[in-house]
Length: 116
Length: 111
Image 1 (spheres, each protein chain N blue to C red):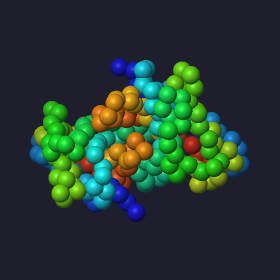
Image 2 (spheres, rainbow over the protein chains, first blue to last red; image 1 turned 90 degrees about the vertical axis):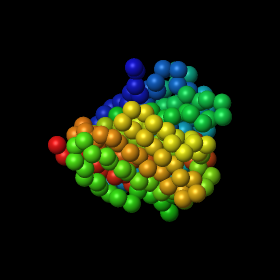
Image 3 (cartoon, rainbow over the protein chains, first blue to last red; image 1 turned 60 degrees about the vertical axis):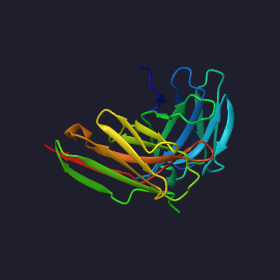
Image 4 (spheres, rainbow over the protein chains, first blue to last red; image 1 turned 180 degrees about the vertical axis):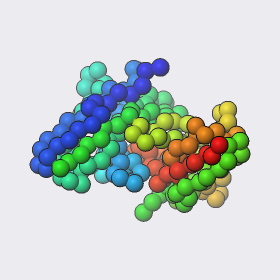
């Protein structure tokens, strides 16, 4: 079965540069979530989209922005990168179910961002 | 403040025996819980979930138990296999639909 695709898998940037991470959800999934996992940490929610509209925000810095496109893929744009932005960035997708009780999130393999 | 807690950072079990991974939560409004398995350099893989209207859910070798009064859930793996060695994350679905994760428990299953 098709899974969530993320690109690139690895990215190295310098401080103050910009990075764009891409996420392609499972076909027919309408909701995308972005998470950041620092070294030795649990994944932290950044932002989510449902049907191409931003649905919720977590602990996402103002330097970051994201959007979901008409084909449901999503991009996370990160500007003025800082050393502390080095982390694994996961995208997850789900299919919204009325009542929301069973909309399990399926994760991509992640993008490892290293800021030098 | 950590809303989902996995107090055991690691667990070692002999192959064929039962692995029990524990998870506690603080928010009684959580209504859906999930367990994910994660290998290094890979994304979390969904294992099993449970709704707060149930106290048990079973899928093959994996069973999740939920004790709402104690705000506690556990994942049982029987029998444990070496391929089960990974980090296991407990997660609760938050009010925004996002997942709130515990810190994870590293399970090592020894042959």
